[in-house]
Structures are given as C-alpha cells and as structure tokens.
Amino acid sequence: MPTLATTVDGLKLPNPFVIGSGPPGTNANVIGKALDEGWGAVIAKTISLESTKVVNVQPRYARLRSASSEIIGWQNIELISDRPFDVWLDEFKRLKDKYPDGVVIASIMEEYNKDRWCEIVERTQATGVAGFELNFSCPHGLPERKMGSAMGQDCALMEEVCRWVMSVAKIPVWAKLTPNITHIDETAIAALKGGCHGVSAINTILSVTSVDLETLRPEPTVEGYSTPGGYSCIAVKPIALRMVKECAEAIRHQFPGRSLSGIGGIETGADAAQFILLGADTVQVCTGVMKVGYDCVAKMKDDLLAFMARHKFETISDFKGHSLQYFTTHSDLVKRQAEARAAAKAAKASGVVTKDTEWQGDAFVRQSDALARN
Ligand SMILES: Cc1cc2nc3c(=O)[nH]c(=O)nc-3n(C[C@H](O)[C@H](O)[C@H](O)COP(=O)(O)O)c2cc1C
Image 1 (cartoon, rainbow, N blue to C red):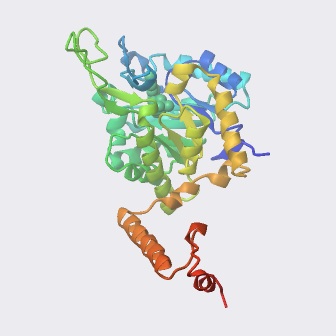
Image 2 (cartoon, rainbow, N blue to C red):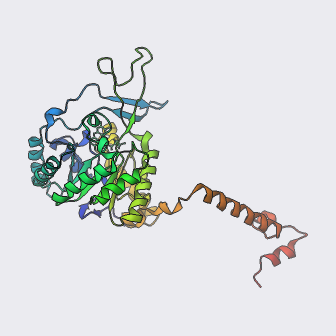
C-alpha cells in the first residue's frame, strides 16, 4: 500500500498537500477547518509587525473564464493580512493547543531592517508554529514599500535577509520566490546560500486580466482605476512547472537535501503528481480552495494514491524528481531524432523485419537470416 505520509525538513506531514498562503489560511477558524479536512499542513496568510499599514480595497479580484465558463485565471490585488500581529500570535498559540500535531507554518514579511525581521521571527516562533515561509514574492502593493517581490528580485538583498532570519530561527524556514524574474534558479540559490531549509515556488505572476469594453477601465476597477495584480489558478501551471523544474535542478546540483514546495494552479492529484515528478517535496493550493472549498483535498489525496499504486511507487520520495532526467537541450533533441531516423533507415535497408507486415514471400529466408544471432 503506498503512503502519502512524508517528512520534509523534519516536519512530519500526513500528506504533501499544503494550503498556500492567502485567504484559505487567513484566521484560526479557517486554518482549523483545513486541518480538520485533512490537509497535510497550512501556511497562514502573510503577516507583518504592523497591520495598520495594510489597507485593502474592494473589489480586489478579477477572474478569467474559459469558453465553457470555468475559472482558469485569477488576478488579485490583495495585500498581506490586515489583522493585528498580537491577534495572530494568540491564534497561533490556540491552534497549537487544539492541534498539537497539526503543521501550521507562519508566512512573514517585513521591511528591509534586521531588527524587524529578527523580532517577527522570534515572537512568532515562540507561539509554537512549525515553520516559516518568508514572503519575498507578493508582486503588488507591497513592492511600493520595497517589500515582497521587490526583495525577491534582488538576490544579494534576499540572501542577506535570509541570513538575518536564520540567525534567530529555530524551526524550518522556506523562502517563497517570485516568478516575476528571468532566472528563478538564481533567487533559489540566493535563499539557500542564506541558509534557508527550502524554497517555495511560485507566488503570483504580475498581470492585467482584462479591460471592460463598455467603461474602457481595466479590471479589477476600484473607483474607476486599477493596478496590475498577481495571477494564479490553472492558467499559471505551465509556468510554475517550468520554474519548479529550474529550482529542483539548482537544488540537486548545488544544495542536495534542501526542500522544494511547488505552487501554481494545482487543483487535482494529477497536478500534484506532476509537480512532485519535477522535484517538489510538497504541493501548495490556494486559488483551488477558493474555487471549490477545503474538502477538495480528499479527492486529491485519493487520486495521488491511485497514481502511485499504478506505477508501484510506495512513497513520495520514490518518484520525487523522476521526470527531471527527461529534459535536455533542443540541440540534443535534434541529435537524438536524427540518430533514431538513421537507425530506422539502416534497419529497413538491411532488410531486417521490424513489423510482421514486412515479411515477404520472395525474401523470406534472407529476412529470417537477418533476424538470427548465429
Ligand atoms: C487572493 C490571494 C491572496 C494571496 N495572498 C498571499 C499572501 O498573503 N502571501 C503569499 O505568500 N501568497 C499569497 N498568495 C499567493 C498564493 O499563495 C500562491 O502562491 C499563488 O496564488 C499560486 O498558487 P494557486 O494557483 O494555487 O493559487 C495569494 C493568492 C491569492 C489568489
């Protein structure tokens, strides 16, 4: 019987399905709901020391639908949590009491200031949270304060902040990377050089979902104006898979043993299997939960288990990163195809039978000889 149970950076998870930071982990009530429904871990909505600086607008989402009306893309201009830090500390403590084995990870973000980062780490870890995810990747709003993706786009700065965090952190730390950059592997390396146990990829992609053709205003429209926001959901999965592959290769070559959490458009067990095949230890789901609710994890777990049984994989590590070996360069693809075609042509010319339809009455003995070894 295959098992979904897995240990990542010492964290014992009943399964690799993790709630990604965002609305599905925005207070103790919904975090508890996620744990009750059987999620392997929950990453809470990103918090900072001063919530008074966080002011959200409504509406703040714009969705893209397919021709059949399915939601396939989701833009948000939501900021980090607007709930006071002390309230969060209290809720983390209460969650630890109620779910002693539940894995709750705090997502944190701060300004470029060592004291502030050390303070948020020390005060938050005192509540008993299982780990940290450092939000270096929110692409809207926060960069105006030089936070979020403004930090994650600067390797030297991010490495320095990771070192500050690691100087006081006593629990596992993942750095959440931004896709709004040309080479995500360089930022993964910076975070891992800074001492983080792992990286998470990807956060949202900076986007403009649509322009209303009546009002001529871009969406989401707030008092007639808009600002580009973070794109998520099914539409981002191909980009997320490519970026996870690049992070996995960087980890494999330079930081073996460090962890990788895959994120972006995951809604099914099959999606999860693909991220794990490209090197993810865990998979995070955010928009999927906003679309269909917390109970989707049951089917995702069943489907991932069925995939594992079909391939006789007993554990997640049996297939983690398996498909990375099948990537190569384009010039190597050309070479492989030329060699395969030449081999097929040579076989045909030599009269070697490759399919039963090729046997011929006149050449029967020669064809039999060509298939013999002696
Ligand atoms: C409405 C919304 C709010 C989000 N808030 C946060 C956040 O506070 N911190 C964070 O690290 N990521 C945040 N994210 C990003 C998600 O955690 C995730 O990285 C991204 O949406 C891609 O995954 P998905 O396609 O499963 O949603 C948010 C995403 C959405 C849709």
